[in-house]
Amino acid sequence: MGGAVSAGEDNDDLIDNLKEAQYIRTEKVEQAFRAIDRGDYYLDGYRDSAYKDLAWKHGNIHLSAPCIYSEVMEALKLQPGLSFLNLGSGTGYLSTMVALIIGPFGVNHGVELHKDVVEYAREKLDDFIKNSDSFDKFEFCEPVFVVGNCLEISADSHQYDRIYCGAGVQKDHENYMKVLLKIGGILVMPIEDQLTQITRTGQCTWESKNILAVSFAPLVQQSRADGEKPDAVQLPPVTVRSLQDLSRIYIRRTLRNLANEDSQGKGMVQRVPQKRKRRRCRRRRINTYVFVGNQLIPQMVESEEEEQHVEEEHKEVEEEEEEERDLGDIEILKQVSVLRDQIMALPLPESLKAFLLYYREK
Image (tube, rainbow, N blue to C red; front, side, top):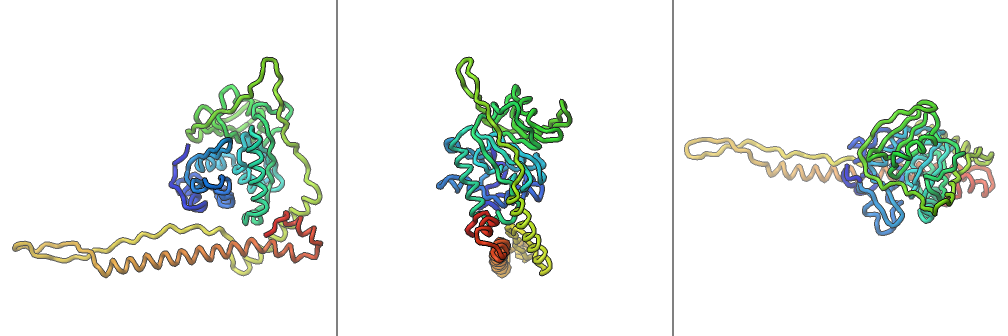
């Protein structure tokens, strides 16, 4: 499934194409997509395919097409502080993007059938927290992944504000999914070849809306011998944050806000630079007249001088774009280092500084 938009050269290029095709429609979803490089979730040797609008699978590892994830993120209508459950959480790519929007006071859980994929997702999450330049620009709700079958979740599990199921749901399991949703919550899942948004409007009432025609592999049902009781999946507990965690969140938030105010006071606008689409130049034609027999006939002839001018203009535009990208990259590096510099300047023991930095080394 996919192929709805043109392939990009890199992550930003892919996001530009998704925006142009109206798959990404809100600023918060765009920011999350730009912050998480899709290529980082591919195995080495397969990254060249990361920026195509296509699904990718290798063994148990699977990523849906970017256009699907875009529609899912928009349909979930995420807000800070919400609880989110990802059924079939896979590589953790979607859960990590969700984490940037729901923030540190949200809940972010994932259930994945394959143990090796959960381990892969945890590795990718750790790499994002420790190494990504985007991490310091957002408040984050760290995803928690568990191994298990989505259709065997314990009956006494808590409910969620937002749920996404990344595998095809048969009609018999529709109500099972709905019960996991809080009143007022939104469930997005593929059912009967339609990506569907379901809103729970009351104790026993729901509203459904088809979003997009899709083709997903069905949820795997656990095979077991006759009379054998299935292993119930225990979802992670919803816990109150420790005083240490709260202190880290509010110290980082305060320092980030001070840095933003300082930047605005100096007239600096913090932004993620987008690539400008290359400007097309049209060649100008000039009128000349030629004699054909006894008649004077007008002809359109390209001016060689104009053609040379157009080539020079193309070169100037490319140089301007390259300079703008370079300045944008420098600006991003400055923004990333500001929070770290502020924390390192605090009169605190080194161990506390490391804690505030999430033990990041850069």
